[in-house]
Length: 139
Image 1 (cartoon, rainbow, N blue to C red):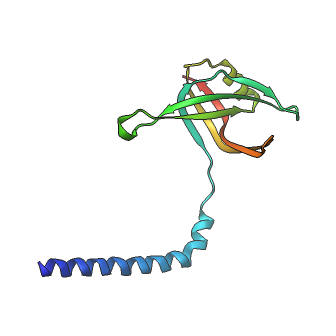
Image 2: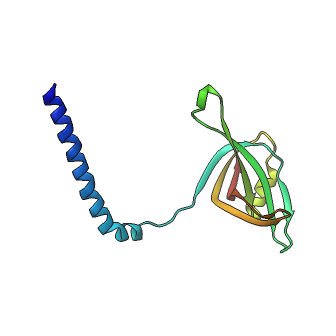
Image 3: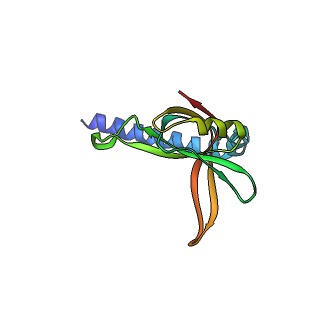
């Protein structure tokens, strides 16, 4: 029994030593590692449309079509089915046309990027996250 405890203590010490060495190497090479990465903001969603697409014209004259997609989660907590409801915004003419063509309960694939939108509300600055669709395909 004492022998297995000794082995366990030695193993823990060895892991701690390895972690310290790795931390030193990471600090030394952190600048290089960061420079090697390119930020990526790409989204691909497959879900069911839950709201009619609505076209809005902004004060700037730009047009946007907004709708909502619900996506079921693979694993649920406590055996309950869980979903995520996501706001989609289509800005390009092609994406707007495709978004206006989808109906409620239609399955779609949306490709795009995550964006955080800000605006002035009566209570102050407000924001929300949405997916900016570059492509909307009816499935």
